[in-house]
Image (cartoon, rainbow, N blue to C red; front, side, top):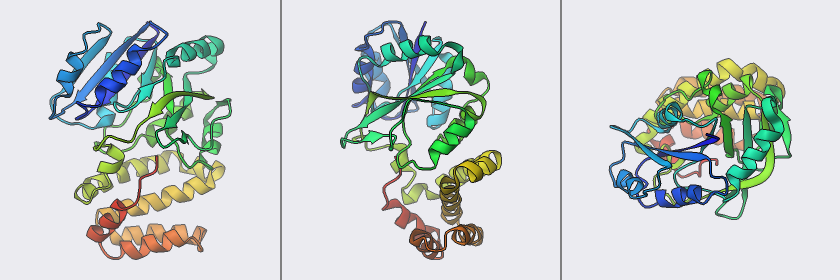
Length: 308
């Protein structure tokens, strides 16, 4: 089998049809769809089961374990040579798998991953600036990070790579650590083609949920732990090849200290950022709000749109 399309889903009863229909409309026929219902409390599983196509498989988590765990579950059950991760509120364009297969055949063993552009429902594209049809090793990927505004992209990954690199199962963490670890070990081709549509109409997007004040402490713990590992494993490379992105990540780590009430550690972290960029006004604002305590800091943070 060529492809396994893996779709983690949590409380997406009304949106999962859109993602599934886009998969079933593919011009390439050799694929399976694995939906992992991550402990939904609505009718997500029933919605998936109502789609009778034999290529769709449903796997259930008894409790909500987070999107990283759901992705690992999907990959563990996958049978395709290549894995495509699709968010449950997004869509693949009809020719997506066909183009992926063409590039897989073109590049052969030279790459273990492909990355593609995504069209956003506000009319923009992600990532921004756009890919330029480049073959990346570890250094190339890190250099690319330095000028990014939007990072999200559609990925197609050789299934065998998951024997070495998987998502760490922090419940509300992001996926940046996985991609950093992946690029350290494997090469990818970043294509300028747009092969998916990204929607923002889901009311429970994790990027928004983890910014809510009621999730601040857990988000701070999980994301802080992820950031500590990332900076430990990749900090020296980031500092060398992507210094602007490195400074941003240091400031992000400070925010996670503030969210968990570790104010002194947050202040020391943000002071280090200011030493590198003393005229950056948002760092001074972050320090000022951090001094007000985790409740006010988390409320302030919840009002800012998360990066996409």
